[in-house]
Amino acid sequence: MKQRARTVTRFALHAAIAAVGAIGAGVAARFVAPIAGRRLVETRVERRFNVLTGAPPRRVSHRARELHATLRVADLHADSLLYGRDLLRRSVVGQVDVPRLIEGGVALQALAACVRIPRHLNVERNEDTSDDVTFLALALGWPARTWSSHLARALHLATRARAFADRSGGQLTIVDSAAALSVYLRRREADSTLTAALLTIEGAAALDGDLANVDRLADAGFRMFGITHMVDNAFGGSASGVVKGGLTGAGRDLVTRLEARGLLVDVAHASPATVSDVLAIARRPVVASHTGLAGVVPSPRNLADDQVAGIAATGGLVGVGFWPVACGGTDAAAVARSVVHAVRIAGLEHVALGSDFDGAVPTPFDASGLVQLTDALLAEGLTDDEVRAVAGDNAIRLLERTLPA
Image 1 (cartoon, rainbow, N blue to C red):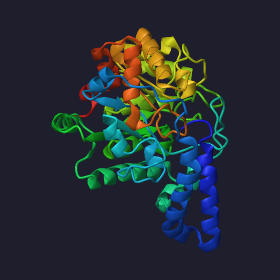
Image 2: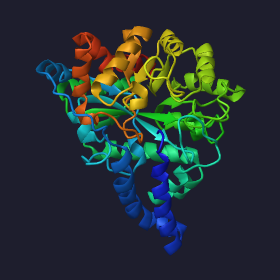
Image 3: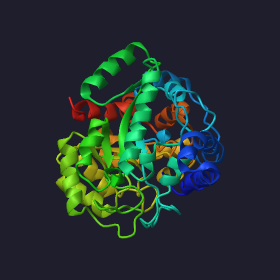
């Protein structure tokens, strides 16, 4: 979630206040808010912020279309669970749903649980004094326990994802183990109209301050964990926080515990000091699930070249983002140039895709249009095998060797 994502909660707050004022919080959250809130989020928020950049779509070559049909595309970050849409139905708003994932050739989509968003969100400096997801939870009729508990919000979003999978008739699989991934990939070889999701955490606020909750989140199927989001927390500094410090003692314990439970540590949104501290103590691959590169676009949010190289040294992945502040442009060619820069710094096998679809940022295409990126990568001079690696095989290989057995 990025700058102006606060609009999500502003309109959600209006919906919640109206409903609560009329009939009371409990009744509103259960009956009125889910209808009015979803409609409001869809029409006022997603149509305005989860959008395409407006850059003319590139004319895609026949070679790109042929290659793309053979790819196992994997994307390391999307916030699509947050808005209340039925992800099994093709929507005219937002950037991700199952039909568009399948049309875009996406074999694996990471779906994040974003559980805390500060008011007046910006990239440079956010104080941890507000939490607008509370109002979103009210507006969308989330269970009452989610109104005050970040852990409950994460578990609720995991439940939503599994409900989609259960209703999909096998079209959507939640991948939470190496065995499940292997079975799914064999199925997809025979049927390309299948897709899968990996559940991830965006920010340690989801722990509600208790390291023991790592086990609860792991048991719920989360397999990648971001230390910070848009504010500093008790575990580490955010690139968009106030102090922007490194890992705390609790943060070091968190990294150790995550690795012990088989969760990948994600340093997207982490401050430079936190990134350095994680890299110094990590014993397993580290991931930046969705990021820009400061060597392409200088920004507090983007990784410096030495950080990119450090992530590669752990055997991890850098997921290149699709939004303008990440990639430096509004078209697929800009994303491709950022990918090429990441490959130059990290090495081919350590670069992946990290769109930030449905993260309140504009992207050049939605999930159905990923063939445009394949074409742009070919135009940048990548070979078919290099495109195949970046588009998804690197991410899938990492998961094959790091997911719990």
